[in-house]
Length: 399
Image (tube, rainbow, N blue to C red):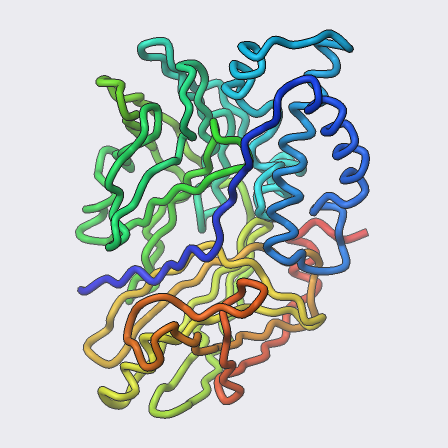
């Protein structure tokens, strides 16, 4: 069975170098007071645009550091050496709560995330896994780094033109081995595959790693409700791996809709097979059956989105697909949870414009706001009603 990884990471969270203390203290105090009324979790009116949301997350992380500085230093002057050393202090508080992911923030706030005291230390550097959450669809782990005085972030890397990492700076994670009940995720369950990936957070000493499953043709879940997870992180410049052994248990209910609704466009028949909800994640399973080579080429470029009945788009988490013969692809796309319960869910498909017109691969063409130029395909749009009572119960929103 051929496997195709269709995940596209469209945005990266970054952070500017901090100015010297004590100017930073006063400035970040102002940022705290200016941003408290506008935190992402308090915005219940709709989806926050990606650029603004990223800036808010960075402000919250910077503001947390500012509060610690004020409490600990008062009005005292701080030396440049101390200012430099403070860059290596890890983020205080929940990594999930400050992540740009409503599902993870919800898991943290509602007690669905397990709080751990898992840590390993080598050569004066400590890696911790302070919390994790597993909803049966994705396993998310917060990872933090302490000590070492590294100038680079835990997820920093320089890349070559083909997207492969070329250089890892000292202190960055350069490889991870993952095992489920003793089996590598790259050869798990008789060839069934699992996908592992990491992403940055507003704090350069922390990251979030996630484990999800490739779709199966028989729809039998790959990840069990309980399993033993073994992880070995390797940091550039440190010879010994940081090994963790963690018991994992599913900690969320699931609601599934199986609409089997189909649309067709230019030789591509798109069928929504299932939409699955947890309090953390929304998963869409769909198939695309192509009639010929020209249709298969169009299918290669199709990107899918999920919208609610108020015109709000869900943030994309990941997506993978498998080929079922030459003409059919089965894909599962993971999205964030909904802010509140919609009356219906709309699946939209679009073709992105390419920088080089007609190119099979390459860079997407962006508009003046840095967003992908999308050509929506109305013929493939599918709207499906939602079991509002069931989803309100799942989201714990019932009065």
